[in-house]
Length: 313
Image (cartoon, rainbow, N blue to C red; front, side, top):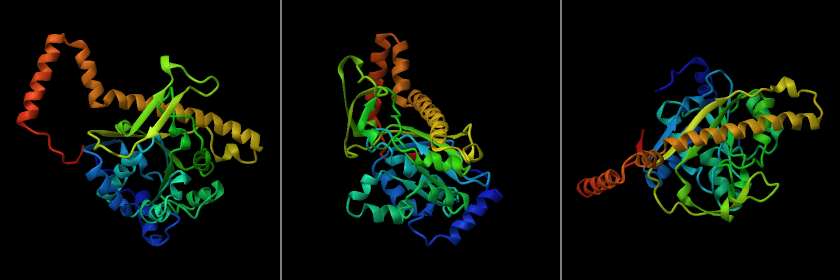
């Protein structure tokens, strides 16, 4: 479904055209296209994004996306699908920017690439500066994956504890809209080594082991993203004038709720992934029927080789 281009969205598109030459504070979403085309052509066979309209500033407020990082490189196709949605539906002039982990900027050339193509506000370094960008509506979409370096660790929950809280604080302090984003399908780009017998390290929020990030060595057969608006309980007015300790306490309540919701969204996606659906169906079939179904699948595969073309459902 293509959203209607209402006045609020048109205002952000106009502002994006006026501010298009300010790399370092975000770039028009249409500049994501080189990245989007490369990822979706070479790394993903079929991609789906559920409810992408939740990313649009439809109510006159910029949107802050809080993204499930997942293990290692699992977030890479998510950014590509977001870029494709904005470009394909006429929202490419809206200014966006994705905050990655700062360690990526240590790789030669990456900071300049992010600055020019993915719109990272590399010239914005504090929560107050992000709040100013959002309040002034200089950007229409920004976001980050607050798990940060915890993506290198394996926890009981898919979405690890958050290490970075600044973007969530900025979203609430500026009364921006919040969109949560969960994903599934890129776990094969990761090697997980856990403690035996489902053991966890005491006092670590469910730490089970480590994740070893692999390069995107294999084209993903299916990658799914789910978007959902989140309404925080607290607002900028609730934080105004509060002592730092009370502000941290209130933000901590929202952060815990956001992580719970992202884990719930992840479980929804896991149930929708094709291999999971096939496994559940197989569990209900007699073994003889399962073998016959597998034989038919192999015959069909030999007669009709699968097309490697990328499909956006």
